Length: 315
Image 1: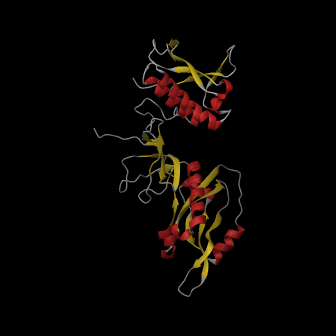
Image 2: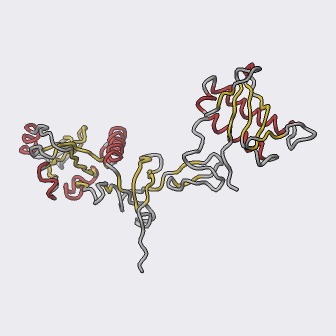
Image 3: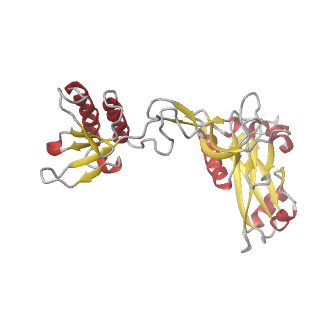
């Protein structure tokens, strides 16, 4: 029997230039090693915004742009002009004008399999665009346009296309053309993971990975204590007088002896864990414990006693 593959839900980016964006893709479908993602309409809007900002920053003559044109299923046909916003030399005579295309959208026919069409900008198209109005109250529809401005002089057939959604309503953008690769998440232990790999070998999960500096410090303090007491799961920390100090360590509900001569810990290890927490608390300020998920504990002697829980580790 032939092996079947299911697409995966993940995130992709292009270095620090585009993304990260949520998407669906087949990890086998690659172009020179690069991925071919399919995006939801919301993710496509985000991608569009980033490409338009890049074009604004660096110029349309070196950037592809993605455009999302919104409409209604019962709207009259419309014509839309998309231009570069800046003038470029457009012919051998030295004339300057914005690079531009015209997009004609038959909104009422989209659900019957017809698609928008792209043409060069002509006086007739410009006139039609001026008369086009958003009409209709039917279901929302969108048309996605991909423009490669640097190739526009070769004709709109080469430089621009309508990106049609796939059977799942997702838009394949940049596949077999752009250098998409998996976005990463960095585990608190220092291991880099592809976005869809949600479990790190250390036992941490992507969703549970600390999101705040004090959350990271809590993990580091726990790792320090676990060097001598691998069973440690939580601790009590007193912040009285703005001086963080671990006063108790627990394995589940059982307190671990912290005395130098009878328990597993020594003063150096406890002091190291204290210093890790103290350094971040001094920098982050009063709201850091709540943001990191520390739990305030009722105590007669201290009104700033917190229980901190260390992330689970893989057996």
